[in-house]
Image (cartoon, rainbow, N blue to C red; front, side):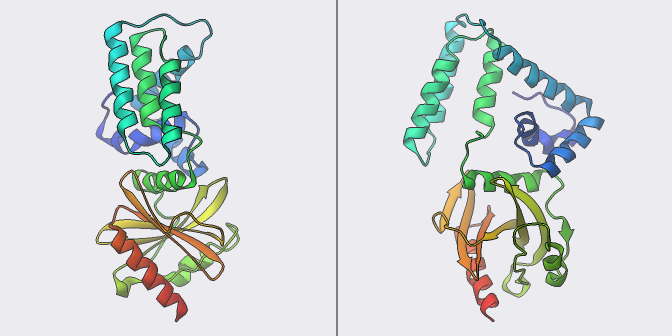
Amino acid sequence: MRTPGPDGCAPWAATLHGFIDGELDAANTLAFEAHLAACPHCRAEVERFTSSRRTMGQEGVAWPVPEHVRAQVVEAVAQMSARPKRDPRRQTTQVLGFVRRWSFVPSAAVLAAGLFLVLAVPHSSSSLQDEIVASHVRSLLVDHLTDVQTSDRHTVKPWFNGKADVSPPVIDLAAQGFPLIGGRLDYIAGRPVPVVVYRRHGHVINVFVWPARETAAQTYSERGYNMVWWTSNGFTFCAVSDVADADLLQLRQDFLQAEAQ
């Protein structure tokens, strides 16, 4: 478990493990490195987890842990396997692999650290939906919700020119209850992706935009966040937020109607 730190460290709790695993985009990596430079607590946390991982990676390090600790690990794995997953075969493989990998480890402390990393850090093979949710969460945790902050769509749209594969349509939906916040550039599936940001009753809605592509299901839920996909005029859109599905479906309908006008 992560040692409680100063209040200013709280927003960085999830980002820290993404940084350790090299899963942050360039902007969030730079932001976290700037925080590390001024925060000895987080530097110590990074070193602690990095040292634990080095220890776990050593060859020839294997002896049985106490039976009561192993029982706790088995119980934690059982709880993890009970969580709903999209792919039961992948879930089973992960659980069995975890049990085989951690049957013998150098100490109870390293075992606890390893269990924390497995349960708390997203896997690098996560799907596109996982990447989108992770990007949405990062935008809320660190100061990177927008690169250009304005409700003027005529300022947001030209800002994207030349920065990604597409310059997305930016539509003012304030009259429909979705005020525009601004836009930013993110990094999804190995490429820069424009994101248009709206609000709904105080909640942030990130709308990711790609050149037209095959999409997943039109609606999707992941870790308490909802997604709605659609394709229009040569673009594919994915709106993600913790608002209800009905709000995201309304956003899609209002967006398409305004675009048609």
